[in-house]
Figure 1 (tube, helix red, strand yellow):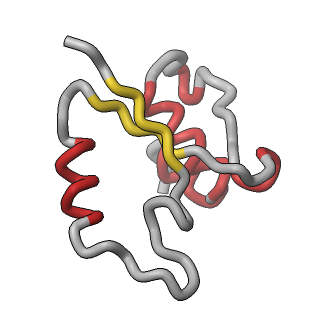
Figure 2 (cartoon, helix red, strand yellow):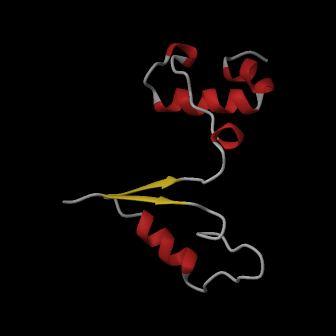
Figure 3 (cartoon, one colour):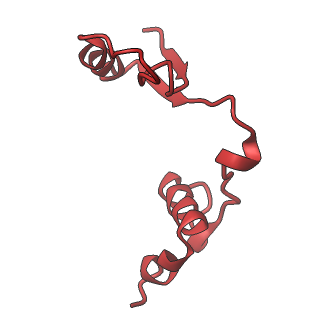
Length: 90
């Protein structure tokens, strides 16, 4: 079975922006598409990397190569006050 990598931007691509209205069936159709197991969705942007993207350094909490650790590392990067709580503190 072949796989599909779907890369898309959000504003003016998936989300209406300005005076354009969202197509009536757009969300329903998109939701059905990305629920297929052979579809992988990736959000991309044309904005400058320094303004939008944090690249996880790895080994957060000793979990190198763990997808969840990358997510948690990103949360701590953008919301530093969560680190103590994430690490099990109060």
